[in-house]
Length: 277
Image (cartoon, rainbow, N blue to C red; front, side):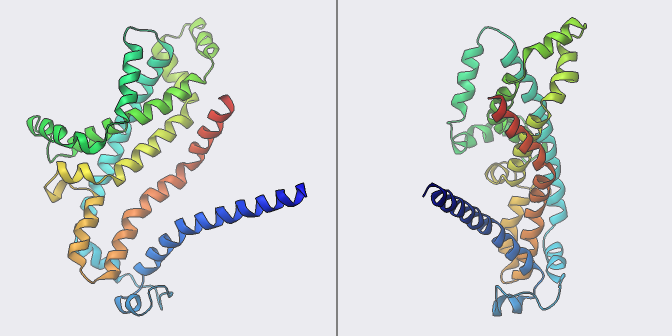
């Protein structure tokens, strides 16, 4: 009886995994497949395979909209916001874990409270501040706001990771004559590499897919990012479904590729955190 229940649980578990994986993968496959079909093929049979590989949709997408410009803007904003976020968060998390200073608890409470504030509630204040600081409609402004929005989550991830690193490692480094800065950059940072990879991936994907702040804080097409490009495509492509699917493919594939490249680091971080916890 016990063995039967275990087999049933195993079957249900795999069934759940298959269903959830299918719900995630099938729409992606459908979008990519449709990008290689003609408009007539999509209209006649949306779920059939293309009769032949057709790149006209990609050519149309690149011709109708300045997608390469959007790509470059998204790469610049996502990359630099990730760098700023990771550098600041790693140092701040280390200081919060290893050092005792006045106002430390208050700072942690404030950071925790910031997670409860809806992003829509800070749109207007940020808009006013950015306008006065001449950061409105600039890539630097987007980089700063994206890096700031990801700080609380990234900070708590790295804080938990540093808490699980034994103090004896740092004490041994101090005995060997290493200072705080050298210990942090040469010892603690390499040890925390999986945690850094985790927050870097989360920050990059969040910046890459962010829509609301990019819409409010920019007006010039020269500084707009890929999520806004999709809105542009929707109005420009009308019934050119091939071009629309091609544009969707070009927008969503980079984030998926980046995750696949770095997923091992994320897995290592999760496993290491669970073992140390």
